[in-house]
Image 1 (cartoon, rainbow, N blue to C red):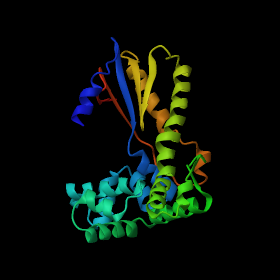
Image 2: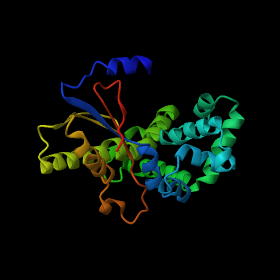
Image 3: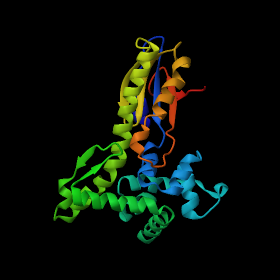
Image 4: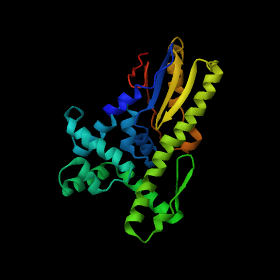
Length: 260
């Protein structure tokens, strides 16, 4: 992380400009909530709560003020782990402790968030039957090896199949839709010379922005990105708000939060 930050410092805005980063906050877990329609997970986001602390409250059966740093850390591990089809052994390695403790923790998680478990099983079954998975927007990814007779190859395909609809919806579809919408907004506002989209990094868009224009454009672009899921694709599903964090600075390694 330290080396990465130093490397990012080599990306410097031209004179009179800022580099401005718009980063989707926990977008993959939000997408998991939308796709699974798990009531508790949706509620955490809809209330604007910290998802890792919120999950820790349910899994450990404690109040909001009783969530410790270690509880939140454990919840964070499993929150991101389920997106990648993490098994008990991987969870044990990430959390420390014994295999039995990891099994109990995972079982407790799925007891508290049953729709997530149901969704993951349905995705695997769908992939086995159809040979592909679909994102929220209907984009397909094919997994021919999910029918392999070799157990570890089949298991690897199942993990990728679990991840594909979530990550594909979040860091591919939503971000690409946002990029197009932002580009249209820039043209609508006549900012083409002052606001330039320069790169996408996973769930982050980075712009070079004229310093004098930043106060005018900052929240406009954020609003466009936070509204990047067209209603028609939800098909009646409950949704979660998308949240975008804004950072800016003279170089990519020294960005600071943008204050309204």
